[in-house]
Amino acid sequence: MKAYKLAGWTKGGHFVDVAKPEPGAGEVLIKMGGAGVCHSDLHIMHEWTPENMPELASVDYDFTLGHENGGFIEALGSGVSGWDVGQPVVVSPVWACRRCAACLGGDDAYCEGPTMLSGGLGRDGGLASHMVAPAHALIALTNLEPSEAAPLTDAGLTSYHAVKHSLGVLTPDAAALVIGVGGLGHMAVAYLRELTGGPVIAVDRSEAARKMATDLGADLVLDSNENTAAAVKEATAGLGAGAVFDFVGIDTTMAMAASLVRKRGKVTVVGLGGGTFPLSYGALPVAATIGFTFGGSLVDLAEIVALAESGRVRPHVQHFAFSQIEQAYHDLHEGKVNGRAVIVPD
Ligand code: NAD
Ligand code: ZN
Image (tube, rainbow, N blue to C red; front, top):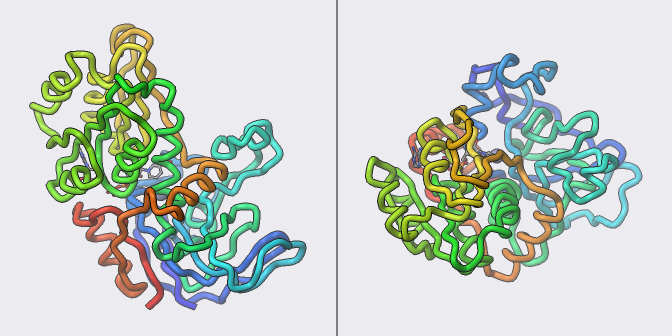
């Protein structure tokens, strides 16, 4: 089968002929229906090194990309029950130990077990005709196509997880601010609209992304420039936002996020832009916090699959054929993808 694999650290990706994998114990073989193209793949292909990503330093850096996966079960490995051949599923990008305290508490995104390598993130992922995945990382689909649902597993999951962890500060009198309305950010705007009562403010430097935010119901949509902060302050009666979500994560967006959070508010940095924020007393309003999140839990994924299946929050998807993978990454790099690009079989 054809697979789109990493060519080595900072060497990008390439198409390679590989053997179709076989599911091991506890695993299933999945015939791919769709694989989302995440901005993290651009970091993985072009920016990550054994030095800046020590967790992956010992990994063979030629795994198949694609950590946002949906498809149809084609075969069950030994010991797998409760799943049927032909069944449509999505695959969580978190392949956790399921034994540590974090996993047992339903917080598998923060697994403290031995390894956390998953398909497209250290092991072979979904940019191929088939992939294998642990049966325990699957969520069943009932009325959604895998090619429509695949982005739920990261663009949806990661943004939902961040929003869910901020619900405590998102009282109806508090604004939410989303910086970067791309694959993850457009889902964040939709989840905020669905789950919270306060105003949703969205910031993006791309006009198409701003239009998407408006279409998704954001109350105020702003370009990212020297006037943004003043406009957010004005819209929040000088207070700032209760929760800020930074889906870019560079110096300027992190500084903007910190300057626009409210006292007792919460800044969540999701973007892997490599930015830094100098933390010292007074750098944030009193009792405000800043932190990072990673992915989301299997419970989070089950919840957003339910939201999507009921038709309430679905990803905005742009399909590309398998042979157009490099075009999709190019468009993503150029900021030309609206919502999420999903690779579907040729
Ligand atoms: P994307 O390219 O689809 O979206 C990024 C958006 O940010 C685009 O709309 C772009 O126009 C906008 N943007 C870029 N620079 C900006 C700026 N200075 N001001 C305002 N807007 C700006 O990317 P994505 O797939 O949504 O991923 C977003 C980030 O989240 C990436 O860094 C990715 O690696 C990271 N990510 C993190 C996790 C996690 O678990 N923490 C999971 C998935 C992705
Ligand atoms: Zn991702």
